[in-house]
Amino acid sequence: MSGKEKKAALEEKLQLLRSVTKSNAANKTSILVDASKYIKELKDKVEEAAAASWSQADTDSSSAFGSGSAMPATVSVSSVELDSNSCSSRRGFRINVSTERSRPGLLVSVLEALEDLGLDVLDADISCADDTAFRFQALGGSGQQGKQQQQQGGSVDEQMVQKAVLQATKCMDDDD
Image 1 (cartoon, one colour):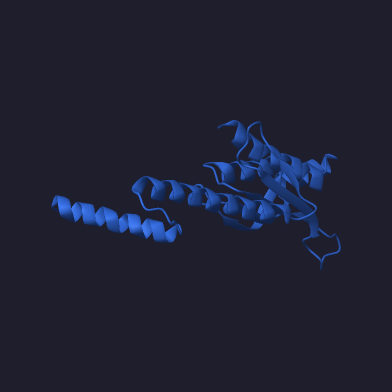
Image 2 (cartoon, rainbow, N blue to C red; image 1 turned 90 degrees about the vertical axis):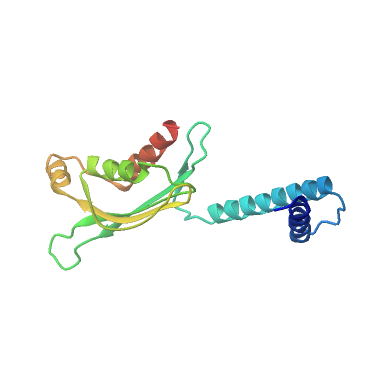
């Protein structure tokens, strides 16, 4: 590619950048400054939209923020009846966890917290990928360990589940 072709290609890209950012600038530096401002405006709009979506989260959820955390976690837990047709109804929990960013090991940490409480995951819907939102919706019930705890007088309630899951997500923050 010759020098003239490189210069023409650069001019074409600058004009494209100028049109995308709606810049009226004539020189290269001003076009780049306008593009930088435009990108900042877009970033602010995205952050506002994200903040608005977080504020519309379930009213029964609570948030955990680690020190200097960039990953707020929202956890909600509600009791559900698992076996409605048996004489002794079996209770379980509907667990919802969401974070704005996934981290390696986050799913494992949440599952270990549930296991430590003696809960088996009966059904789950999980969505996560590197550097994107993490969503975990599950139905949990007492496993063999949980049944033994209940027989020994220890019963798991909604607050215990929520606290354990929040702690699991907070530990992920502290690892950073």
